[in-house]
Length: 248
Image (tube, rainbow, N blue to C red; front, side, top):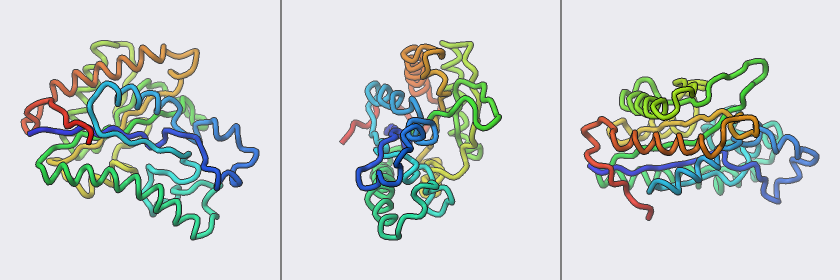
């Protein structure tokens, strides 16, 4: 059975569309911070999209406007800046941005299921080295649903491949966040079973995108090379070759 690779980046941008900039007057520093976007995630996303045949999609606006990686009922769907918008403006964000994004991915998955094509979905993120008083020491985090054995195995294989070429990297599973918490991959798991879909979130420590961190280009090469090895050796008899479905 063939499979398709989907790569997404929900927090790729810190931009605000012109019609909503009034919400962020004198907030330029905040918009440059990790609160507004996942620093370095879009760079990683572009590297992987360029290297691997895949379906790809990334967020175009800051999560401080509306968070693509939250469910519609989540209390943090809107930030402190946008939660008091009028219903009309919130509906505009939901329909024209949030649902358009989610529905595009769901349509790819639905089409794949109809064709009996398995989907591997990689959602690219990054995390701040320190949140409040908690210091995060890991370089990489793989987030998955522990109840889905195929996701757990995929992440174990990717970790092994990455450690093989970069033994000093500190890699943790389901850290700094849990892979089954509220988010895009969790939402998709509710519609697609593990015979149809796996959703893996790659989390990268943002320190590596600073001048004092590991060379950015070297880290990105580690990630891409180890992913290639993981896809080639993925031990699941439901996936019998590595001929990825090209973009349509």
